[in-house]
Image (cartoon, rainbow, N blue to C red; front, side, top):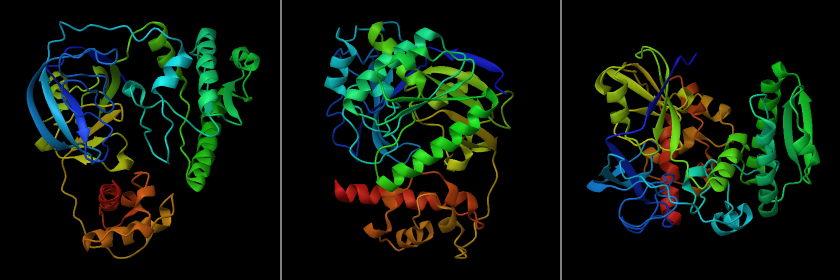
Length: 383
């Protein structure tokens, strides 16, 4: 159970991701561009999406925890001169028409030009909205307003709304949208949502179409950002694990360096004495350092005591192939990568980075790391 909440509002440094080797649509220079996933800016140019500026102290090329090689600019900033520039005063429809580009293929995080602070805004052939009693009727009405606009851009045959028996869904019932409302008992809501999500996720993989869960919080954040003319630059980040005194939720600025957060937290041992797991343990993203910036893709850091895992050779048991949810052959991809060959027909690009292959490997091999390497090689070859 999360037992503490803390807010870190003045980190000493901020990392700004300037470009990636895989995506040429991103920043061309330090002075006038917004980085992938971060509403931050280095330089004098003022935009409504960039309320932070500072003095450049370091520029390095680094591989982030998700395997992307990025040029990172470290800036000094005491946040005394933060100016929240008003977002362009236009209605939601006009804003979306200017800045939204629908994703062209199946991908985990669709690129949304101009609005990197809401990279988790979801799209799906059959959007799925899960409601709960903590939201007010006004929240639902605001969500319906944004849904109407999204429907114009990405028409959905059905918008599924899952709601407990005691939640007022009149805003969705009155909306001129293809809404199907499913009432469930509160104790059954999580189970039903899980089953529905799995079905939609599988259908999206088969059709090779973009998939996303429609988070009510994302809709409300977008509505609040536009109506109140204030960009969202904060995110929540959880630190937990055996080497922490208690799990803690931090509210931090996007781009906060993890080692700065660790120094403030002071609840776990130095990195060389700990194992750092980013996000879910199943993803098997074990970090060897804490020199990375917190982005919207990162939600938690799990800290465990350091242990040396003995890795054995692959025994060709096929467990990774059998449990792969997208039906590729991780073991075959791993062996081709070891041989210095990446073959298109093995479809390593459809890997969803779930980590199940590594989880089931009896030899404790990080199979997913090989598949990710194959994916990156294929992307560079196609660019």
